[in-house]
Length: 284
Ligand code: NAP
Image (tube, rainbow, N blue to C red; front, side):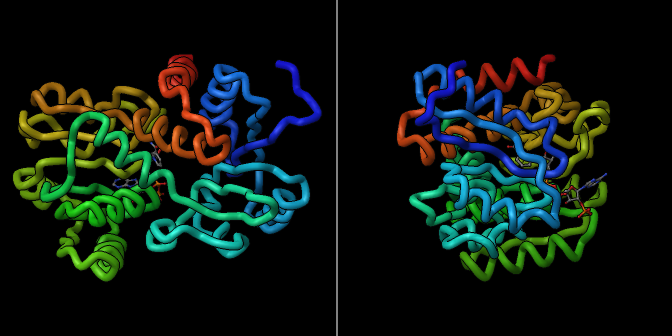
């Protein structure tokens, strides 16, 4: 790779950051389109966040991805935050337009795109969402905005209630919030068209763990795991056993990257190249 004097810099901030897929995904895309851009990971500690964002302005960095633990805290340092990201209360992408920093949430948009690309329209569907953390928040808001009915189940019940109230206030949908136990889960899955795993359960290295087994699932369901490492989680294996349609977290990861790429470069993203780069990293 030759870096010219006109190169535009994008990156991702987080702590830890060494496992990020974003540099591989975006650099492969820049390379494919011959764009004079480079993407780098930045390890940014909580206490260094303000300086990091000042640095984006000072160094004229074109765009940033934002990951754990900065998605909420970073909002206070930006010039503007788009409406959906504001409602969600978290930003995962920053675009720098001549020193004006705008925050977006492409986790939400990327998730929706992953569904729509598979021909699944969430409007009017019943969705059981497991988890009430950052991923669940983005997904719950975008599903509610799109007209889905939600049951949010979380180990810490209070967090599910708080999220359900927040989503209802924004969109007026009726959202149920339940403690995540076997009985509630089985009942909710019995009513659901789509199941979303938005917990960490099943994530590398705990790859044999799952909150749901095949006997709780139906063949006409869609099971979407936000976990992307491993690509095929134990949950997705159980869903396959039940004959359900499965979608891997890789799709959400790739589509959120596609949306970010297009905001930063104003070029149509090479989706297949980005997907291949992520899968190659995950198979290492
Ligand atoms: P987070 O904010 O820390 O939330 C974690 C959630 O998982 C909480 O609801 C937590 O419940 C629940 N949880 C953790 N361990 C559990 C267990 N043993 N049993 C039941 N529930 C458990 O994390 P996040 O950012 O939302 O990330 C959640 C998952 O989404 C991760 O696997 C992440 O990789 C994935 N993700 C994927 C993408 C993508 O592009 N594919 C994007 C973002 C996130 P409590 O509230 O009770 O602690």
